[in-house]
Image (cartoon, rainbow, N blue to C red; front, top):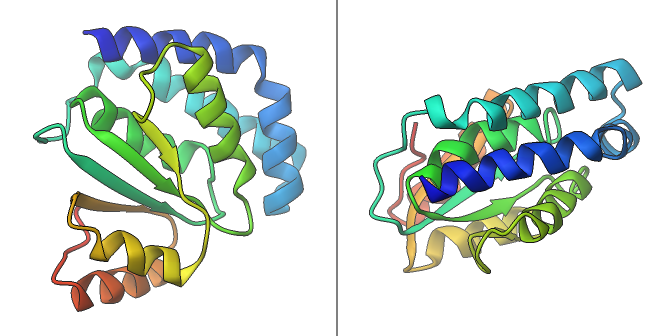
Length: 166
């Protein structure tokens, strides 16, 4: 209940910064302005419908979400919303090509009342993913993006005895 309320508060805050987020996405990912604005709208729908989402089975542990630059906000939130509702801690690893939306989202989440450490951003490339997969505290590893990159992330996870979760 509390996480759903916080996600609704986050939706209201994101709505106020929608054009800023769209600008970040367009600048870093090369998307057209209209496409970036549509991604922000998709992210808002995810947040506003959070109460209807089924929480991901979780023990409240750490869940890492690796994202590419195709949908740096909506793709991340598609994985993060149910995970946050389940009470998990999220470590977001955005694409090095488009990290600003994840960083700005983390700032907005803090301003919206999320507890410290509920949502974290890890920068880097393949070495950062290696580090996530090697971390003993990691409970689940999720991916949002292109299938080809998902295969590479799954290979890294497999080297550490982990699976890329659905």
